[in-house]
Image (tube, each protein chain N blue to C red):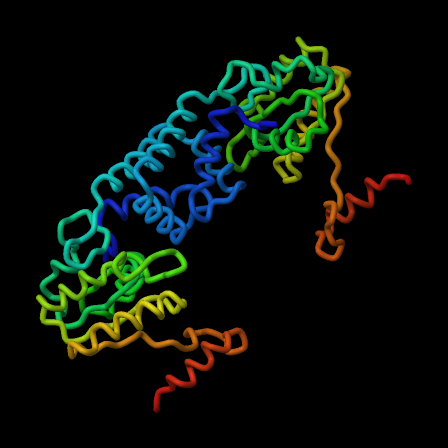
Amino acid sequence: MEYYSEKISKLISELGTLPGIGAKSAQRLAFFLLDCPQEKVERLIGSSKDAKENVKYCSRCFCLTDREICPICSNKNRDEKIIMVVENTKDMAAYERIGKFNGLYHVLNGVISPMMGIGPQDIKIKELILRLQKEPVEEVVIATNSSVEGEATAMYISKLLKPAGIKVSRIANGIPVGGDLEYVDEITLLRALEGRVIL
Amino acid sequence: MEYYSEKISKLISELGTLPGIGAKSAQRLAFFLLDCPQEKVERLIGSSKDAKENVKYCSRCFCLTDREICPICSNKNRDEKIIMVVENTKDMAAYERIGKFNGLYHVLNGVISPMMGIGPQDIKIKELILRLQKEPVEEVVIATNSSVEGEATAMYISKLLKPAGIKVSRIANGIPVGGDLEYVDEITLLRALEGRVIL
């Protein structure tokens, strides 16, 4: 049986397809949209359309941006000699937020995942190689996630770049700052031990 | 400093104004929308617009619907002698889902809340009184929430209707089914005791 009229049900089911939005949240969002002023809904729709139509990949680092070359790539003060390889634009933003990395980025827009049928040719690895041939890069920091796919991708890129004589590094695994050893998994504990730093 | 280009930031901040969507979820939703096929975004926008334009209050029970009279009010098999008063359309749907209530509803679309400046005239109480004068109602079940505002609204309606000789009832307070007494608050425990049922 239907509890809501058709147009409301349709809106709820559309909202329910968004990531992290379950049945209850979808219902809550739908009624929020129905209740709120018309201009607010139009603003939301407008910014979705605007972003969808105008956002594309930066032609240098492949992050999502609304310009041809993103603000980071076109910033002359950034150090061109070091490139951080990340999985997606969100991860790039995470590092930008701390404001301590002054190099450039390269956004893969995915990870190698045979399970999902994603091979090296499906992500921006070829484009990374091309950049390395044109740009004066000395070090590539691989900052893919610490997942199986992220590790495999890091390994793949590292094997590809090392013969070319480029320094390849990987961000460290270890205990998160403020983290409690008691709640940290065994592999992380092991990596933290292996990666210990002399004081 | 901005981590994303302007159009992405704008979309994230618009999404962040939705209920239950924090900064991280807004970011996740924005990138989902940017990544997903154009037609999916259009479907979402379309159903939002369609619902926003066509959904209005049922002229009898004031639930949100896309018809003049909602399917429940226009169903001849429902018992017109009993009306359940609920705060909003979602609460109506919660009772419809169990499928055991065969009467009609009256949706207040709010609760009396002096703190928020909402008085009896701001919710559909006058409309309830008018319905009771026209329809053959014998019992009004008040199913507003068990919050301070919900209780106050229930009390207000009850005092208004009783002199007219209409039977007014209130849904029971008590231990939720499957609930553990240990985790139930004191007022609920007290209400459960007061409302005990002879076996």
